[in-house]
Length: 314
Image (cartoon, rainbow, N blue to C red):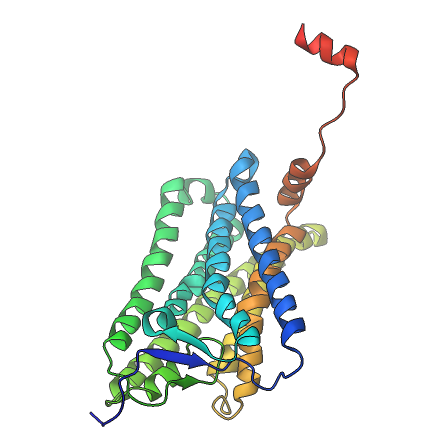
């Protein structure tokens, strides 16, 4: 233990080099957040209101949409505050809260497995992917994600903090938190590295293997139209996976990750704001059922002639 003042809160710097652009950036982020809430909330409402969409993949999409609402909600308010307040303080438990939605990657694994069964094992799919299995897979994704992050959070929150409480980021990254601890954190750093190596490449490897099998099955279809139709059902998921893992791999697995903090913060913004904003549109564009349900929900009711209304009443 080293001498120093005990820390009870952290200071988030956000983007200190954006002098003169705070108001425009605040408006852009605020509008993006509202669109994220509206898009993901509308997708959940449409799926639950339309019986034709109450299928396993749409159930998993609702789970993903809930996470895409939760994660920005834990990060964007403080990010917006850094543009309008000179000193953005955050308590230590609140600082660790954004770590929780780590099971987005786990739900992507579940969705990859669902695609694999639907395309590679179509005859077994109805009897295999039952409602009980869907619920079990969704709950498992939450349990696995929360267990990994909760163990990390439980260890971090017990640390004594007495170092520099200024974090040069718009949310509490694990690295700066460990630097503020006034005790040896080598074990925690090793556990964090092990969790990162297991979760990120492991989930990406499972997704890659699933789509290698899917691609092999698609190539065996003799009709080009059939190949295109089946592949289009996977295009949305592949796009979302590419956005998520592209940003994550760029931040954590490149050699210059610690020397390009500004680039990391920009990529973090894309992962925090852009991905949750685009996912509702990505999954809607290629899904005819969702588009039909959306048109049905937004269609104005037809105006009947008074005589027709009287006839309906009779």
